[in-house]
Length: 110
Image (cartoon, rainbow, N blue to C red):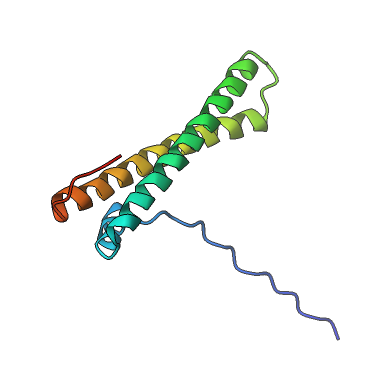
């Protein structure tokens, strides 16, 4: 008797939490967790910026190649995606800061 093969449904790409939901979640965190989240986001931004610098160097080095391949395109797409993520993380840091300063009325420290 032949076995029926089934394929798993495609895994949906995850989408980042919205700024509104992120902001709402901040209200439940203690102050120490807010500062830790801001530090984590700054660290992630620093790593992404280093990665972007390397990607930009690679793209520039291969830009003149007539044989630009899928790797070049993938690097460029990764660079653009990283820039979007950096902007989103910067927005999140601003939301954390707003929670500390405006909502809780406390001073912000870097």
